[in-house]
Length: 417
Image (cartoon, rainbow, N blue to C red; front, top):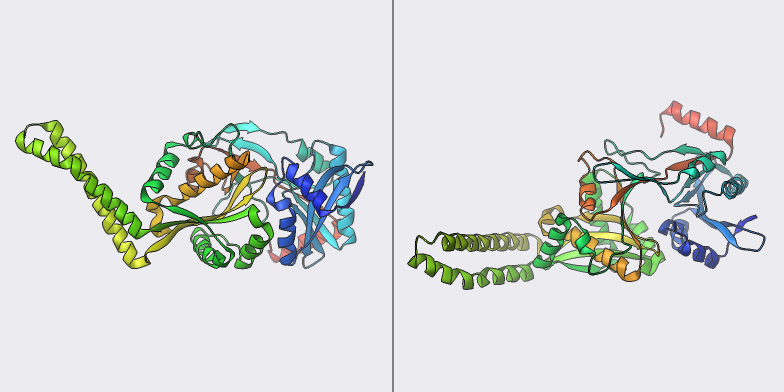
């Protein structure tokens, strides 16, 4: 076997066909990282016949002492092949050491367990990769639930995913829970519309994600990141807005309100002629209550139109599109317009896109890993019927063990993370 730098086309072809391939192991990600002051190489293992056996987008950047070498979402390799894993680990460590590396970190794109809605384990995956990576010199750090809002800066920890295999455009929405089905139905009644953003609208997207990040206590990506990602990924990334035009919405509500008059008039006459007709009286009251609901929506929307303008952005999201999955990344919901259920429409639209493209999995991405009811984001994602997955965790191998031990000791003394 030989460890070598690969041609970008060969690397990309392997990644696109690998079951664990992800947006983090692509030439587009390479371009984004390089533009953001990382160095990045397409590395891999080939056999004597030139067949590629494993690949890794090997990224590195300076620390205070030496450099950290990292493979996010990889390497893409058969982790059950202990000899191949050790060969790639040893050769990568040698490469890192030759380029001022201090530590090597792998974050495989895989899972250890899957959980149902109540936190019960419904599936355990082959975890021989842990043994094989430890045998290759890595220290293992398992995924941990997020407590007190303290999200890991390195590992995702837990993610929520929906298997789309076997579903069609006709059966997809039937696979959701009642809550998601109801939310989608309401967005259609309200006339919520979706729109894909252009590059010059990313600053507006960033304003909304900033507000959400501040509200929920985490750090947002920079505008520079969104812009560079947009350019690098092309059709493999989408930024979506869900919007509402208040005048259209008010007109629609008014039409529904007025249409009820055709049912109210004959019932009112029937009740007037037969005051003891309880069934007719009940139906009349129900229809009048419906009219009052429409009147309330019209009044509320009219106030919002006065305050916010003719059209508003309700919600939005960023999505990576891969042959293996569509990944739902950064998003926001405008708190003032939660009543319009816009996030449900966005998720449904992107899952329909996945089915249209023959993509087998939809990744809602991060959740806390807590099932005690404190994770509202998890509850929303569960309404689409999927599973929570515990990710593979973090594997760290010192490249210069003595220096790494010294640096870690100094960090403990100074109280640095």
